[in-house]
Image 1 (cartoon, helix red, strand yellow):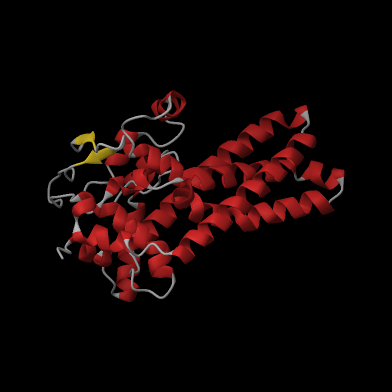
Image 2: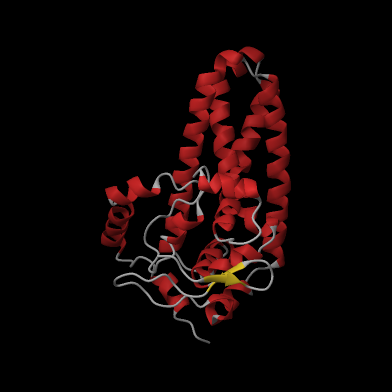
Length: 275
C-alpha cells in the first residue's frame, strides 16, 4: 500500500501517487492539483488570527495546569494516574477518529464559516497529502488547540477555587483530562509527522516505531482512495478494532439511510477538479 515518496527539494516528503487497491481511486496529484491550489488559497488572515490566539491560550493553560498537577501529586495516586493517562490517550485517539471521519465524510467547503475554516483542510489533505508538512506550527495545531480551551480553562478554574481535599479526590479525573487535552492538542502535529519522511527528530521516529504515536506506514492505509478507513490519527491504536467491527461503515449506512446524503461526495468533487 505504500506510495512512492521522494524529497520535494525543501526537506519535506512528496508522495507522487495514490496507493492502489482493488476498486480504489487512481492518482494523488499533490500541490499542482487545481483543487489543492484553490483550497490552499482559502486560508485567510482571520483564520490565522484564530489559530494564533488558540495556540497561545492553550499552551498557557496547559503550563498552568501542569504546575498545579505537580503541586498536588501524591505517590498513592501512581497506578490510578497511569490508568487515567492511558484512558485519556485512548479517548483522544477515538475523538481524532470521530472528527476525522466526520470532516472527511460529510459536509462541504461551501458551508458558511465552518466549511472554509474547518472542512477545507481535510479536502486539501486528500489531494495534497504533504501540504501539512509545509504548514508551520500555528497552522498545523491551531484548531486542535482551540478544541481543548474549555476543558483546560475549567481545570484551571478548579485548581484556583477548590480546596486541597477536593482536588485530592478529583486528581485522577484531572490527570485523565490533562492527558486527553495533551494528545488532542498534539494530534495534528502527530499527523504531520506521519507524512514527514525526512528530517524527523530521532525521538519522534522512536515514538512512531514503538507505536506510541501514529506510525507513518500505519497511516498510509487511510490514504488509499476513497479514504474510508483508519481514521484515528493520534496513536492509531483503535483503527484495527474499529475496522474489524465495521464501525465507520455502520455509521455511514445509518446516516445515509436517514438523510440520503452520500458519504464523501464533497471530497470526491474536489479530487475531480482540474481547473
